[in-house]
Length: 307
Image 1 (cartoon, rainbow, N blue to C red):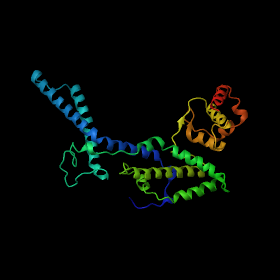
Image 2: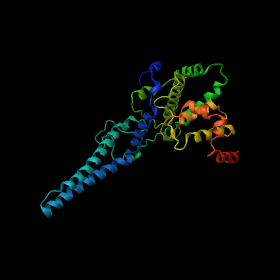
Image 3: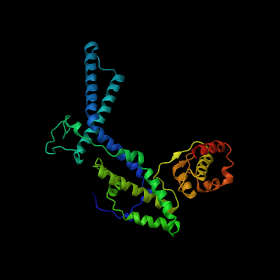
Image 4: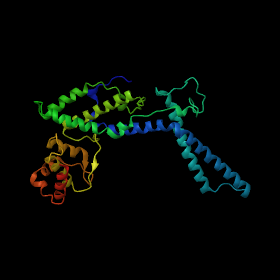
């Protein structure tokens, strides 16, 4: 791994960690698919080249004429498409020896795909912990926020002082992968479960720091650590649903302030705008949500069933 960095100089607040993770996952999917896709793409490339050549011979034999320009362009476009894919996957093959899980003889680089023959490819098994990175990478932060709110209640500190204290604790974490992330580098060997778990924990810590800094600054980061959902109905109905579920005790072990933050950090209105804190403060009043006659009767019956 690279030399340690000065964490105090890292601008966590402006990190778009999800953009990096999406790129990293896509790269791992390429490595995982190379053993099946490379021979297939090569066969398709060879096949379209042969068909073009056969068609050319047929034209010259029967009409003494070259391939018409429109048909020639179709052939050439398809050939270029598969050629580009073939080049990409062959380059991916060159990186395979950098994985500890891949066995090959680096002294022997005269094989069909440099270090590998087609018969070697099925033995390569690069699988990342995609179930965490794709499915659960947001829920960990939500759990952290809930635990933070509960912990705050027992600390004799004001809000920002409490967040600053938690931030200082997180900055002490031994970040191993962060230098690679900051430089946009690919991280190998995440097909090893132990390594990938360490990476997953580090990503959680980064998202926690981003959240704490946003709370201390009092503004939302440009790239929030949780991807928001669009609410395409009336915003006051969304707020009413959560307010009443909280009042009924169905959403428990949390405060109204935490519920407001949850709505702000997880939802956009139908115009793709973030919900405002002042708007939520206004709606989070009994006299306000009881005015919502469209949804109130249905929600009341739902709460009765849930209880």
